[in-house]
Image (cartoon, rainbow, N blue to C red; front, side, top):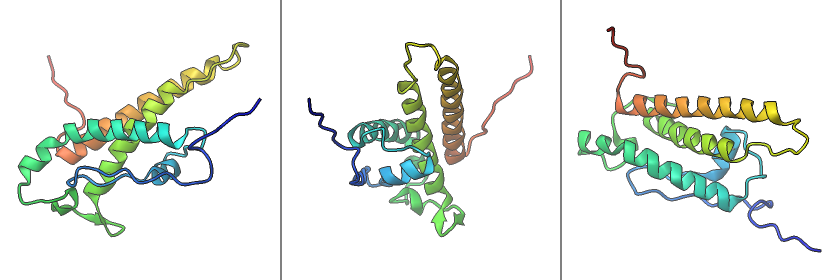
Length: 152
């Protein structure tokens, strides 16, 4: 019996180009930042990152109309940290958090001995944390409050 494994070898994943306004995403940077190993094949990682980019781009569409002179997200006037616009840091944070939450939800442990039961719950909590990080990054990019509270 032989097995063929594709996409999770030693070759790095290719950059995922974006629409020109938003930056490309480097899957290897995602792996490093989110501590994601090669158990997720490059093809599957690319699919998750592309879906995250589509979702985040849709939510950030108002940035284009608010800043008509900006050709790219980096052109929006914002502070720079480590030589790069805060807008780019936050964009990657949003995409990474979205993708990581989806991976955590898809890769819950399966175990017939029931020893992984607690780990599945821990991963769900982490997926929820990543969804929160996504919401905060979107709010920060749009300049809206992270939390809205009303007294009744």
